[in-house]
Length: 396
Image (cartoon, rainbow, N blue to C red; front, side):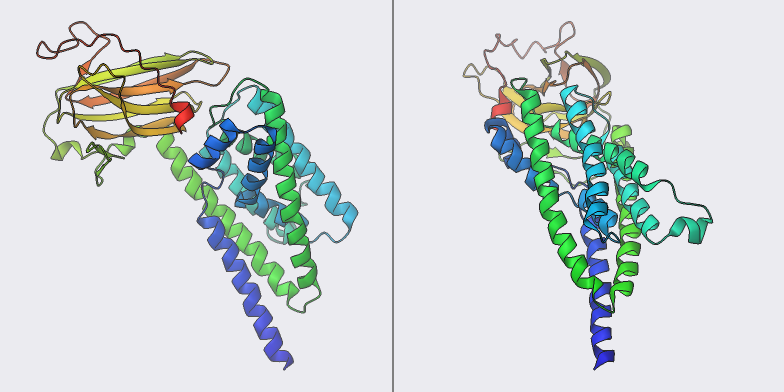
């Protein structure tokens, strides 16, 4: 009977470890916010910010995994409070400071380091520095504070994906941070109950080894997945290779990438265009495409994420109608478009940071630039100035 109980608890421990690996390997973008969350945080007050902060932390598996690693072998309330507080202070400082001052880092790079922090804390838990490296481990308190600062940058980078209003900005950020801490406390309470229950079991030693090795593996997987994303944001032209195209509801063919040059006919032109979006400002950049024309594009900022709306406006239309093809907040985008109507096609960018943002736009295809002489072909009359303002932030 005892053998059977130990076998079942061992199997359950192994399953728990594998579950940790499975969850983390599926959430390389654990901090991404849905369009519904974006709309809610734009329209809501401070309580809404607090609620979104709490739900955001509860879905941030990399942060929770790090907290899980911190408390794994802690048994006294004093030690738990001391180390968790150190982590909280660390990520709160950078979350508030970086967001308020519009300091943005590449989120893939930050999340890659956060993945390594999960591996680090688990490696420390199994005394890996002494057993495998024959060195004394670094001071745990200092490491947790330092890694907490990095986690705060990750939270700030994702929060800044939203088109934040400058009205009551600091109070909204603090409310979001309070929600983060409430979510962390809720998750922490559940973790402590589970660990306390397991600590009384004979299988706790097996569970601890499987869980911590699972965290090391999961952190490594997160690191590799985020570095893969970082490579693409650093070299957006890599997206301009073969993939399957899709159609939007308006019949416009749009895809994440385009066919390889060897398989396509020679395009009419190719440009690399530099665009600057002023601090707390916005700007549009458009091409003229005839019906059926192909545009292949890739643009990238110098680091900051911008809200953007990739859209088209039919030639001769005076109603203010425009058709959105892609709408998001990011530091880069790439793909291809086959125009279903003649008219202007391009981007609206909104810069919510306190510094100008530079964009490099690379375009290839059958289009006319509207910022050069004789931009429009004679067969297409120049359009009258449009009264449309792309207040698309309110329609996320």
